[in-house]
Length: 615
Image (tube, rainbow, N blue to C red; front, top):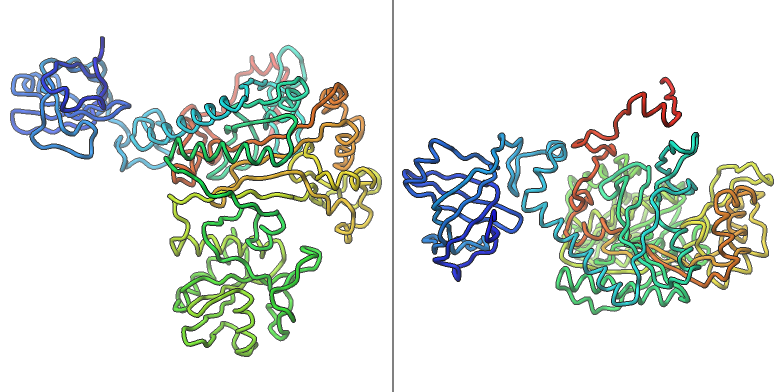
């Protein structure tokens, strides 16, 4: 037996017992004729005391950091207790020890405040995983996984595995493809999600399915994206949207309770996609704080039912506003005292390539009721006051205004709002706010000419091709042709106003889950494929198996998939999902520990009938 207890198990109640521990040497501290060693394993740290006799033995057989050590000794009460440790009341007076394995000097210190950079720690990830802070992240991940499985099991869901080697049907992100040796010249793809399989399971009668499943997408990476990632993937039969929302609100609230000890009793707010874009500039708003947008000017085609926040429109005369497609503003509370240096820093912030604006205008709402702006010579005090009213600004607030092209400006004001929320401490890591965003457009317009039917551009699915229109829009979709004849007036096409029976769950400004009620009738699914510019033959080639299944009594069904890695990162207070994945890839999609991807030898290439193209 290598150990009787772990390094986090012993307390004062075990004083006097003889125990055996095994683990890694964290630190070594010599004090004259005695030596203290901190021994670490997954469960904690225990202090060891090597007395005079064993200390002499250590001189001949010295310990080093990360040596694997086994010790036997007696549990004693510590004279100087450490309340920061689970075992801080005791130490082990060692009577014998065995070095089970030695270690070379690690490339970085294995402790919370390490001296290793990201690249170095990624290369030696198996050492980085020994650090307590990384261990806590993986423990949280396990807790979320366990809680999700428990909730779904209790609600009648069955965990069913689906294949990883599937047919390539690229619709959104690029597929990872796998050559087949036994089928020369043909390829599998790794699944971007189990979407069609879970729908087939609904056809098969398994009315409540889930998986905690790996998915693969060959797309550009960022802090919250990896080439392989994990979803909590779920599907239900004989449900409407309301059934899905209620079931999976319950799932997330259960996870909050089990993992974070948070009783989330508030009703989850709901917002249409249009309202989210109108008030916040994006479809995953952080609603932990206010600072909603004032839409001072915008193209009528964007939100036909909306009117500018200023009843008579912005006054003319200021070229920046006059020539802009969109002018939007936010009122930042309590910041009217910002200095010239501070407003200049914000201007440079919005000019960064990631934001892409040419400049920033502002109005200071002074405590005495007066107004001072960066464009005073173009607007009167009353006009500045009207903008302040539209932005719902109070005395002491700073109004920040962006002007430019519609899409870019709306995205930029959204990012600026989040930046100001962060600066003011309004985006608290220990505060969680859920939101459902509903009624997305079913289609987006793409200028790409699909070369069929003389189309001027084409429709692409905002969600995916299996999302059903809202019931009230199905007739519109079926009775109208998807062909776009006039690109300039594509918004007048009936398809432009079709709403999807889709929903996203947002947590603290991050989309953590998305799903929809699915199409389950062959005729409507074929109409959807045609709307996306897919010929009949192409639809049969890619999805004939699904269309065929719909002819055998497919039930109404819908589902949702949660970004498991992202959910863990948010609950753990991190912006990067890599911190919650045992063996992640870097921002170039490389595993620097394994040095993958890598070349394969000529023999393997020959077996796969692959010839590499010269660059």
